[in-house]
View 1 (cartoon, helix red, strand yellow):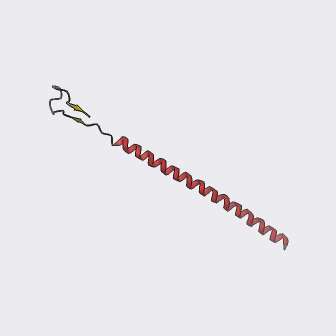
View 2 (tube, one colour):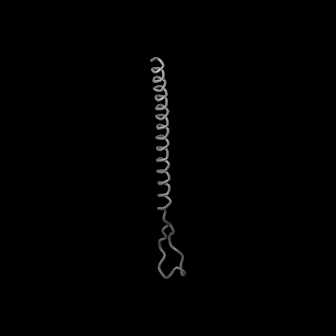
View 3 (spheres, one colour):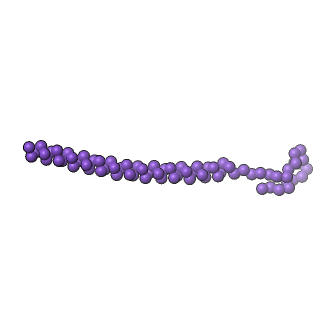
Length: 74
């Protein structure tokens, strides 16, 4: 009877350690996922800034580009 109880107690202890390890890994994975999301958001913001950068040239009349240079370049 004692051997049976000791065996059950040791299995319970092992199961508790295993569960604790899994919980620690879940916390680490959650932290990594949050870090990945922040990095993706930063990358998305940078890409949006690069993609939306447009150069507009004002003051060039159609058909007369060769005659005169542009009046304003922004």
